[in-house]
Each structure stands twice: as C-alpha cells, then as structure tokens.
Image 1 (cartoon, helix red, strand yellow):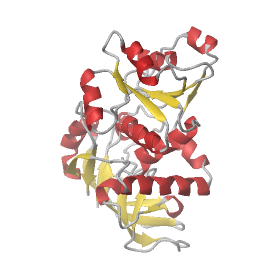
Image 2 (tube, rainbow, N blue to C red):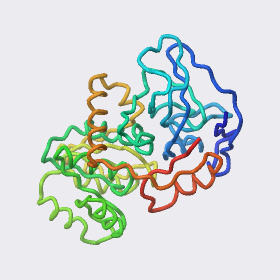
Image 3 (cartoon, rainbow, N blue to C red):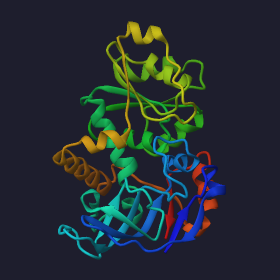
Image 4 (cartoon, helix red, strand yellow):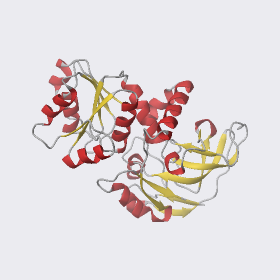
Length: 325
C-alpha cells in the first residue's frame, strides 16, 4: 500500500515521502480502514516538523484524521460492518491507503453526509464544539476569539450562533472582516484600526465578555485577555504566531482572570459516551441544515504531497486541503 512517511523531522514539503508499506492486519478490537480522503491539519505538519506535543519514532507515519471504508474486522468487533463508511480524528498513520484503528473510536458516518464533509468531521468540528462546551457560556453571553478567520474561528462563530452565544471575532486585517461577513459571520473587528477597542465596545454594547480563546499567542493573547470581564476565562487553544502568550499581570490580577489550556487530545477522551454522542448528533444536524459549513480548498493525490502542503500553508486559504489515496 502507499503511505506517507518521513525519515527525519523537518519541513513537510521536503521530508514527506510516498513509500510502499505492507497492508496491516487488524488485531482484536481493531478495524482496518481503506482511506478515501484525509485532511491536512496544522498539527499534522507540526508533528512532521517535530514541534508538536506528540513525537513519533522515526521513520514515522503521518496524518491523524480520515474518512474511509471498513475493510476488515478484528476479533470481537461486532458493531461495525465491512463496507461501512467511518471517520476518525485521532488515528496516527491515517495518511496511507489503509490504516488500523480501534473500533471503539471510529464514528459511523450517515449516508446523508458527503465524503468531503465527513473527512474533516472530527478533528476541527468536534474539537470546536467540545471547546464551546468547555467555555461553559450560556445563550446571550459573549465570548471573544482571535484568528476568527481560521477554520476553528469560523466554526466557533457558526456553532455559537446556533446556540445563541454571541461570538466576537478579532482579525488582523480589514480584508478579514469582509471575508467573514461574506460567509455570514458579522461580529468581527479588525485590530489594524486604531479604534478597534471602541468598535468592540460599540458592537457588544458594553456587555461583559466572559470567555476568550487565543489561537495566536504573542501580544494577541493579551488583546483577548484585555477584553474580558472580571472573573473571565482565557483559554489557550493554539499558538499560530508565537509559543509565548504575552499577557498583562494587571489584567490577570485585577480581573481575577483564569488562564487555562485546551488540548482536544486530553479533553475529548474524558467526555462521557453520552456527551460524545450528543455532540456528534449536534454536528450532524448543523452540517445537514447548513448552519455549519466545511469548505474544501483543494484535493490532491497523496503523490502530490508537496503541492498539497504548499496549498495548505497558503495565506488566506478558505477550507481544508484534502489528500486522496
């Protein structure tokens, strides 16, 4: 089978190689999945570089999320069937024609869900809806996020609106405001304006902002914290620009703020099965009725991994880049 492997850590464009590997056999409780589509996520590329929270042994497989078809069942697997479409968001080695996954972690995909949506169902959408639950805000309350024009930012705005939560988005460019408004996301402010804080106050009507999400790091984390009300919570979700959060001690002290991290790999496994089912059910509903959109920027054959990585890293990209095996 074809599989994307990297013999060293480094620039994904340079180190990822398509190699022939043996087709694996499922063990007890496992399923072999034939891959249809797999998205490129930032954390996949960080793993290839060796800069993520998970460091694989070299030479290493790659990829973590995929849509596929059940190809073979290991002993004891009774709730899935050969030929059934399934999705996974936490199976390392998904960038291959076949991969093994624990049967208990696979998500059966409804027939109504297109392949392109199902292929990106788990990592970003499920992390986002779990993040929204993690923030513990009620309908009518405000939250603020930076990187609002990123994939998670757009989905958080859409899912929040569906629940009646007001989501204020911060972007660094005025053009980002127009891009989001074209996608139906209107509560957005560009921080390249000198009066951006006044714009925030006018948009929220001075209502307290109880939670903030930082996906950027650096001084942008401090911007988010500065907007929170007393007793607010700042959640570190990513570090697109800097691994260091630059926040003012005065904001932490005088706002009596809480700062904590969210890593889906830690939070999601702790969810009760009933909660997981409820959240996935909501995702299926939101995608089905168009409330949540999962655009695709481009699809590449796995052999074109260099071009695929370049497309994934392109500034202003809207939607995920998918790999086909």
